[in-house]
Each structure stands twice: as structure tokens, then as C-alpha cells.
Amino acid sequence: MPRFRAPRGTRDLLPTERAAFARLETIARDLAARYGYAEIDTPLFEESEVFERGVGALTDVVEKELFRVTATRGEEDERWALRPEATAGIVRAYVQHGLQALPQPVRVSLCGPMFRYDRPQAGRYREFWQWDVEAIGDPGPAVDAELIELGLRFYASSGLTGVAVHLNSIGDGECRPAYLERLQAYFGAHAEALAPAEKARLSVNPLRLLDSKDPDLAGLIAAAPRLVDHLCGPCADHLAAVQAHLAALGIEPHLEPTLVRGLDYYTRTAFEFYREGAMGQQQALGGGGRYDGLVELLGGKPTPGIGFALGLDRVVLALAEQGQAGSPPVGPTAVVVGADAADTMTRLQLATDLRAAGLAVRADLAARKLGRQLEGAARDGAHFAVIVGDELAHGQVQVRDLQAGTQRSANVADLARDLSRGQAGHRHG
Ligand code: AMP
Image 1: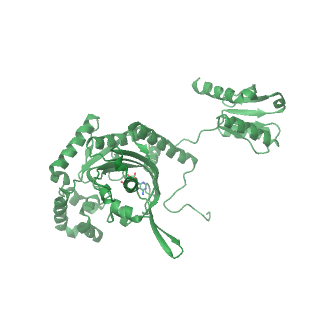
Image 2: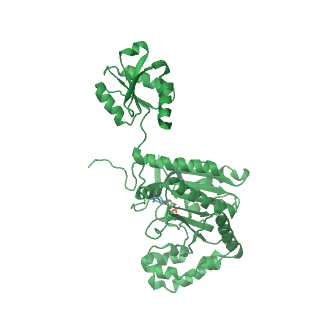
Image 3: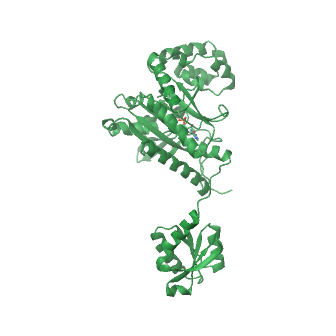
């Protein structure tokens, strides 16, 4: 057992798995660009209060899972928190940099690691990756549908099949308070069925009871009053309009009245992505919603907004379950090998020139026999081996096509063009 291991709940992404993440990131970046969402990055840590306010002090994410960090400098302790999600930091940046002065909405996209100090299990890590997209300054409902379609497009582009969107409205400041009272009264009348932690939730955050995974509560939750039945007129209209826009895009969401999302700042539209048939046993692949009060909570002018966060780890896992494992990184175009085992300098020089010309080339830098060097080139998945020998004095090398099994002389002066032509010919021919 090695002395040092990656911390619990984290894992190393070795090249094959990293390639699977990189592929998803490329899809995400390409989609963001096509849909007009510009890339943004925010720090991996913030003042804890950004999350306490922006996610909600009474949410699981902040109350139980916030990864708090204390840095000691001299006498002073500085307290930070690693970001558990991206929205609060992005909205903090939006307010800090006065982005409300830009044409609205501000559409941004961020790919990166998030941290939650949760109990690790399959598909649940302390460090995980999200693709996050936000449209700040648009009251909807059309943009709500645009984002949901974008999420589904991401899963489809990744090759994941059977992803469904679950949709709900969690109302707003007009209709939610009266509904919460109704919900408290309902669960209050069944208090004997609630565990102590659930009773505590009842008074501070009753909506979260709907989110409970406690099997003993399933019947009670199913019969609980539903917020969709108690929405105010504008919220009901908004939900209907989101559905109409989705229908125009050929998307039929599954209406899920108990979907509440774990974060406090949501208003109206809330959605999550699941693989069909996996609801319940399986965790969500991603989720999002509208947060019309969040910008103000973080010190800005009242500004509506909506966004989503898709968990990349769970997509990689789901793709593997579907039999689409990541592919190993592709081999170089060529490996430069040589008959004179000790002459690593010539091999390094030639590889450097070819790389400067834009090719993916490795030099064999071990002082070993030519046969071993060629074996290494084949193992790397290289298309060509460039063999350096005495004829280099006359500006010539041998080029062996490792895939076709053929060999020929080539001019060093023209080698970069020669190899890229050969590779393109192979790829297309
Ligand atoms: P949330 O905002 O909590 O709904 O998170 C959005 C998505 O991020 C989830 O649907 C998951 O795919 C992913 N996610 C959240 N927490 C974790 C975690 N601890 N480990 C892996 N993925 C996570």
C-alpha cells in the first residue's frame, strides 16, 4: 500500500479518463460558443458568505457539505470556502464588475472542478466537475426553454441516450410563502412520521422535506400539497410558457411536482436531467433553475437570471455503463528513432524541428537498440517511424509506415510536409 494516496472523495484522472473529460469539455465549449455563451472563470474559493448567501445557509450544500478552508497568516486566520457550485461566484463577479451595464442578458459558461465535503460514494465525490451555463438579466420564459434544450443537446452530443428533463416551478415571493405554511401544516399534522432532522427542517426549510430520500416518507410526500397547484397567476403563466416553448422545440418535459432543487435561491423554473428509468435509484445528471432574487442577495440591483450545472463525472460514468468507455490518447504522427543508439542528440534535434513545423512527434531518447526503439514507436500508436542513419549526411532518412508496413527514403528538408501529407492521405484514403 503506497504511503500517499489521493484524498478521500477525490481521484486522479489518469490519461484515458482525462481524455473522456476533455472530450466532454470540448463538446461543452463548442455548444456554448454556438449558443452565444462566453467563457468565464472565477476563483476556486470565495468568502464563505458568498455561498452562505448565494446558495443558502440552511441548504445541505452549505450546512453540511461546504468545504471550509482556514489559512493562517501571522496571528490572523482567514476563512474561505472552496466553491460547491459555480452560480454564486459568477453572480458575485457580475455584481463586482458592474456587468449589469452590459447589454443584457449576460450569457456565460464555465467548466471546472467544484468541491463538496460530502460522504463519498459512487457518483458522489468531494471534488467533481461541472459544466455551468448562466443567462443573467433575462426574465424568461423563452431563455428557460433555450437552456433546457442546450442541456439535452449536450447529453445527445456526448452520446448518452435516454436523458429526460424533469420540470417544476417552485413559485416566487408572491405564492411560495403561503404554500410553505400549507406544507408545514401538512407535515406538522404527521410529525410522528418525521425523524428529528426532518422535524428540524420542517420549521426552517419545509420545501426540502419534499426532497427527502427517506423511504418511510415516500407516501407522505406523494400525498403532500403540490406547489404547482398553488402558484400565483404570473408563476403559473411562466410555467405554461416554458412548456409551450419547449413543445415548439419538440421537447416534452416530465412534470415533477416534488422537484425542489437543493439550493435556496431558485424561483419559478426548476429542472433536472435524469436517465430514463433511473429516477430514484440514480442521482441526477444535472440540474438548474431560475434565480430571480440572487443578484440582489449578493448586493446588485434586482436582476432575473437562470442557469444550469451538469455533472461531468456522472456523464463519464453513464457513458461507461452504456459501453462507451473513454479512448486512450491518440499516438504521435511519428517517432524519431536511430541506428546509432547513443546519438540521442540528432533524434532530439530532428523531432524538435518537426514539432516546430506543427507535427506531433516523439523522439526515442533512450540509448537502446534500433529494434527496441521501433517496438516502442509501434506501442505508442505512431503512424510513422523516422529512422535516422548514415544517409543523414546526404539529407536522407528512412520513413517506415508502421500501419502499412512499408518503408521508403525521404528528404529531411521536406520531411514535415511529407509526413503530414502521408498522414492526411492515410486518414482520408
Ligand atoms: P446540483 O446543483 O447539486 O444539483 O448539482 C448539479 C450536478 O452536479 C448534479 O446533477 C450532479 O451531476 C453533479 N454533482 C453534484 N454534486 C456532486 C458530487 N458530490 N459528486 C459528483 N457530481 C456531483
